[in-house]
Length: 225
Image (tube, rainbow, N blue to C red; front, side, top):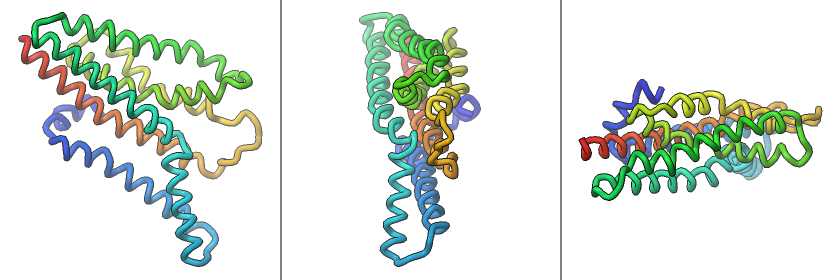
């Protein structure tokens, strides 16, 4: 979808882009909290309001969306700042920016992607004390692929396929690592509420990160061509 609509994304202003990212997240959170409240046991308005706030908090923080947003967000911002600095250095004629970007941004992210899948069998086997950490890493890693993906798309480098593949299969480690290995599934009736918010947060952050990375790489190429 990013590949299909990237030209339209780059035409949006920063305010329009932020609205595109935040709007659907807010709508889904409010809708999920409203539905959960309305299908619950009816009671006084104060109880209904308390239920609504609880479910809204659950959607934001109690699902995979919380770590992805709280931990992944700052990491993506740092990634954007690093990419901007590396790309601007070539414009000033001080270094080969693409060599620096590949060495300091693209390859480390690709190594992280490879490491996640190399450790996947251990998490899938349900190793004691390991699933929670692997699940947390799996929740946070996918947002980090969008800036490198945008740069590799713009510069047509060989790592593009690795980042696309990593994103397409990123839900698998999350589901396996967080899925209960016993019959005591406390959220059996709320699996959608557990995983969908995470996917939406990752996608929303990814749209913003991809657009920023794509514009930076395009601007750098225009300045150096």
